Each structure stands twice: as C-alpha cells, then as structure tokens.
Amino acid sequence: MKIYNSASRKIEEFVPNHPDIVKMYTCGPTVYHFAHIGNLRSYIMEDVLEKYLRFAGYNVKRVMNITDVGHLTSDADEGEDKMLKGARREHKSVMEIAKFYTDAFFSDCARLNIKTPDVVEPATNCIDDYIRIISRLMDTGYAYFAGGNVYFDTSKLEHYYIFNDFNEEDLAVGVREGVDEDLNKRNKNDFVLWFTKSKFEDQALKWDSPWGTGYPGWHIECSGISMKHLGEDLDIHCGGIDNAFPHHTNEIAQSESYLGHKWCNYWMHVLHLNTTDGKMSKSKGEFLTVSLLEDKGYDPLSYRLFCLQSHYRKSLVFNWENLDNAQKTYEKLIGRIAALSPKGEPIDEENTKKLRERFDSALANDLNTSLAVTSLYDVLKANANDDTKLKLIADFDSVLGLDLIRKAEVKRELLKKQAAAAGEFTVISEDGSSDPAVEAKILERQEAKKAKDYARADAIREELKVSGIEVTDIPHGARWKRI
Ligand code: AMP
Ligand code: ZN
Image (cartoon, rainbow, N blue to C red; front, side):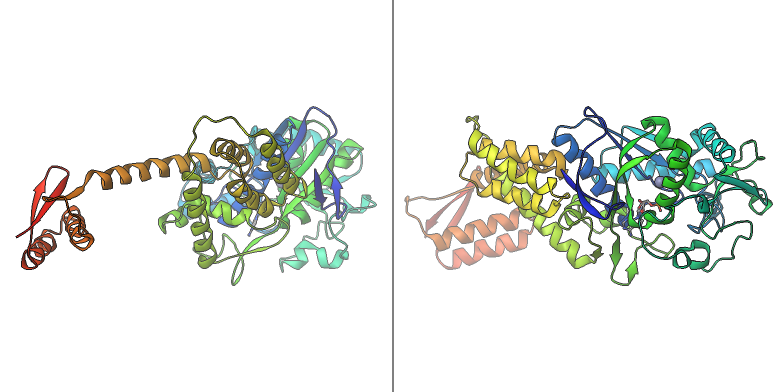
C-alpha cells in the first residue's frame, strides 16, 4: 500500500515494522459533548484504513484513547478543562459526563458502521504511565518545573516542527489564539506535561505526583496510552488535521525524547469537514450530529457514503443538498444489489480476481475511497453471474462498511412481498375478454380501498356502472361484466 505520510510530506510505500502486525493509534474523542459529523468524518476514514489493512492481509492492533481529562478549551495550555466545562453545563460530575458522552460516541460509531478499536483506553486510567514518562523527561533535561507546572522544553530539540514549515511566531499557539501568554514557559511552544498550578484549582480530577497534586496535559496521554498498549514503536498514527499541530507535534517531541529513538513511522491526517460558513465546531451552538441526520430522515450510512465519495486529504463541504444526493445514490445502489438473486451458481474466479484487483489497487493508492466505491458499479456491470457479484460486493463492503448485503436483502424481501401482494389481486371478466381501461379502473379502485378511501372506491364503482360495467368483489380480486 502507498500512503501519504504527513511527516515526510510524501506518498510512501507502507511497510510495517513487524511483518505480523500493524500497530495503529488513533486520537479519540474528548468526551465533553456529542461528536459532530466532522469528527466522525475522521473516524470513518480511519475505520476504512483499518479495514483495508485487514483486507490486504495484515493483522492490525488498533488503540484509541478517550480524552476525559486535560484537554483545555484552547489547544494551547490555556482555558479550563473541556470536561469541567461540560460538567458545569449539564450540572453533572465529570465522570458522569465522560460516561454519557463515551457511550454516545460509540453509539454514533455503531450507526456509521465504525468498528470499535481493539483497545479503547480512557486517559484517566493511565496516570502512572504519564508520571513515568514525565519523570524521565525531567531527569534527562527535556522537561522543567516552573510556576507549579511541568513543561516540555521544545528548545532542546533540533527538529520540533515536524508537520509544518512555518516559523515559530506563526505557530505559537498561545499567541495565535489570542489568550494570555504563559510567562512560565521558556519558549513560546513549550507545553504542559503536568499541571498543578493554583489557576486550575477547580479541576475536578487530581492525582498525586512527584511535582504536586494535579493532572496530566492533553498531549502526554496519547504517548502514554500508545506505549502502554503498543510498545515503543508505532506504525501509523491518525487524527484530524487540526491535531497535527500542536497535539501530534508534541506527542512526537515527548515520545522520542523519552525513548531516545524514532517513535512512529507514518502519520495520516484527515482533512476537515466544513460547513458552507466555515469549520464545523462544537462551540457553534447547534451542531450536526448523527442523531440530527436521523431525525431529518437520513440513513447515517448515506453520510458514510458521502465521506467515502471524496478523498480524505481534501477538505469536504457539507450541505443538505450534497447529503440528499448521497442518500439517493445509496438507495439506488441498494436497489441494484437487491435486484441480484443468489442462485447457488459457481463463482466466476477470473472475473473475481480482476474486479478484486481493481478495488484493491484503488485503496492501495493512498486510500482512494471514491474509486473503490466506483468499483462496486464495475461489479454490477460485469459479465458474471449474480452469485459472483454478491460475493464480491460482500468482500468490498468489509472495507467500505455500507451494510450493502443486509440492506439489499431487506429490500429484496420487501419487493417480494409487494409483488406477492400485487399478484394476489386478480381482475377477471365473466366472458373471459380483457379490457385494459376497465382493468386499470378496477385496480385504481383496489388501491383506493387499500388506502381506506372508500368514498373514492365507491365513486369508481359508480363511474364504471354508468359506463355499463358491473363489478363484483371476489376473494383476492374482482370480476366484471358488461350490463
Ligand atoms: P475532539 O473530540 O475535539 O478531540 O476531536 C476528535 C477528532 O475529530 C480529532 O481527530 C479531530 O482532529 C477531528 N476533527 C475535529 N474537527 C473536525 C472536522 N471539522 N472535520 C474532520 N475531523 C475533525
Ligand atoms: Zn492524541
């Protein structure tokens, strides 16, 4: 597989460190509110990556954190903890908020067919791991204690800005976001590893540490959780593009300083989903959730299809018209698959190989999901039997996650029932002749009866009588004669 590595800014051949396993880490949600569909775009594309790696024959161990402490309202180390803000908003405890929104997140994921990672670890479970890493960083001079907090000293690194070429001034997060500069920092982009400062006295969750009672910074949790479950090296680390700086930059700084060697080989960043008026955000009042899409009558999987139709390295604009189109495409696709019927015929191996290669090479090319979706249509158009087509579609859908086979089965059953219901109602004439105009009228009457519009049914019967036709109801149909 070839994948764009944000760290090298090049498309590279994906070669895992160990032949038998791909170690994959993805930044998880901050569980102070519902996930918006922008967040979920990132999780959908990461899910496709994981499923494709498995499709391509790799074993994957995927780890994800749940941020339930330490993520402040500003990506710089400023503002209050987002969890505390959520708890105050809803008059609940931080742990209640964390539980509620973690469950809500996984329920959204289930509705979008996003597989739960092999390991899901809440940040509050791994305090000892962070303390161990920070202690070594203090011992080796990469971290310093100032004003009650422990900071990482970015000036100790030769190459701190991994993902961008911008200058330090542009990237100074505290300055960029218009918040007060933290005067304890030796360098503008130094970041907090451990907070104890009185400013954060209202913090709900605190732990003892060698530097005083406090809580970890946001960045250290991902390094700690990754190393706890995946060891000292990592093949691929994913997240939304906003995480590249400062979060992932800081993860690399602290992890590699702690380990003394390279930590992660590939970095995959998903570009943002935007609304027509800009970036989607949780702080913008009413925001778009999976439940909102459902309330408006959309199948969440049509949103998944919408995401798959564009490349993860392009930002994507959401509007209702685009989602309508995706929903129509999704319904039509299911309709076409429902029209296939398994007959127990032998699988056409030659066609299978050719079509599978086309699908595989689309995804092997930096996860070209829109081309992979197109290869579903190649299957539908192929000169192969329905059993072959259904098998291929099931195979592709193990990566695309559109629930195509099950939805098509449901649709097929529905069509069968409708056909049976339509077939049950027969129109016959007493003398065996046929008259399409009369038959159409009688069927129209039947439809009116089905809709319980008896007035209309009676009116049609009268209309036929006036034109010289008498209708008699019989079991499962109607009989007519000229009078
Ligand atoms: P958060 O819950 O804020 O920590 O974000 C969860 C994930 O969603 C992170 O990987 C973010 O980078 C990603 N993310 C945030 N906003 C968007 C967006 N508008 N589009 C795509 N991904 C996003
Ligand atoms: Zn992270």
